[in-house]
Image (cartoon, rainbow over all chains, first blue to last red; front, side, top):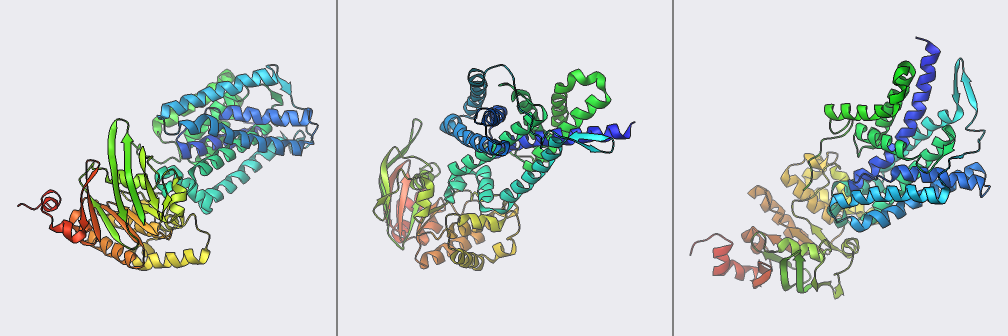
Length: 297
Length: 236
């Protein structure tokens, strides 16, 4: 096997996997706290990309300001989404809030078609992210180097927040027992808002990086990545942040490697995630890093 | 003083509390006894705002608690040790205690209270790095009490602290409750273990299917025939 081809594919896999990981973290954090699959998470990802696009193209902001604005606004959007679509249903049966999540997803996608237009838009090239870097015979797009660095940093910061800070302790408390957390004078709503905010701004960062890599936007661009990253989170053990990163990386590697070395399967690329999901769930239903949990009645 | 007036709670079609009223004077221990399903837990949960009463009020030193979010009630010093301890199993003993002081900012005071909790319960000190889920039932109850103390309660409410514990541990927990009370903390205790609860109580109330049917001093209730028959398991 050609060595440089292998390294080339490893680099591609690492960057795609890290991107998946970034988005998977949002799923897993929200699930960890609310036991809710936020089906609109992929659409939040799309929204982040679009806001960045308009901030650069319509508001003529420099790219770094546009990215910051997009990430911030998307974080706020996530907080708002929870307020409007999930909070009123928190005491209702779980199925209601799940249906609301699916509804929110369709609503955002279709509003996207109305507001942004269904025709794909292309992101103007940003030299910092759009340079080809050569390592011997391996050449990668600079954005592919940034993504794993961002994901690594974010993972470290999140693990620190969850593991070492008081806010993180409150998050773990809410995730184990909401009423007991209330009895500790923890403002449960604030903890949940914080979680949605963080998850959504990571989705925005993921969306922006995605468009740096594949510079085309359309209102349904979040559907497939959203689904795959949800799978990544489940594979890693949903509710577990490190697990989401592991799941994302694994998914990225398998996708890239199968397409690279078994090109006859290229057409099944998107199906691989689901195959992997089935295999992992059969072997370890709680995911790779997940713990078995008794269902609370 | 905690004053409960005409407190009613409905769960769907079930009228769990039917307009009960009682008082917990400052510095006293008051026990509320009754059988399973009489509405004891519901009473405490509606005082701290985990359950919304359909009518009636709970007030603390003249201020209505009803309608306030739980967080605000706890910050006023009205603290509940819930039934079944409900310690955070996947957090360490130390972290559980830290969460007990979640709303407080006074670092020195928190450190002093942590020290005091460890003096009251040396077992917790030995196990402070351990996950709470790995503790025995009695140790978890100690942690639940310690965690509540970390919030500097003025009124400590305890829901079935003796549930599922060995008699020797029960005795120890009740001893600690008395000790806490001596430091000026008012205590409202809910128990199926009527004897233990009435023995340390200044005042007791009997709750039956959502209504208060008897009241008196702890000693009076212990001597009352109806109480002896129904709750102390004594034959006539």
